[in-house]
Image (tube, rainbow, N blue to C red; front, side, top):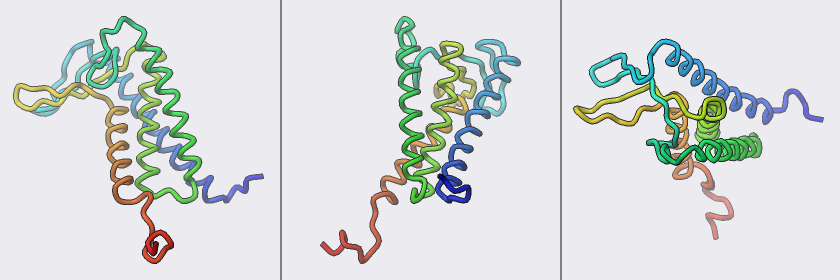
Length: 175
């Protein structure tokens, strides 16, 4: 039986709650955009940022957007598998995961589930943040994409500086 005060369970619950916050924020913002901004409409926020309403049938940067429809279910299956792997990974490292690793996994998980919901329900992902640099626009994105990007950056930082590192004086350093 798992004790209610188990610190690993508490940590896992916190990281899953963070992923859930990302999913809810992503879905709420997408629903607001769908409700209040017409498809392909733009609402300027700053000189270089617009809110827009776009549908992305593909993956990042509209990869496979014109693939004929099969990509919807491919990305649904892929996101489901990735989400399962991330959840298991968070569970396995619940006692000892560095903060950066667990935060990165949680953000990527929340973003993956946020976009998974769109693909499953609508067949596309709603993107709405548009950033301009002069005459060039970065591909539109959403809260889920932002969480995935920040989470992936944290995972890279973790792999470079934290996970797998040993403390001075351990067996591996003395060999």
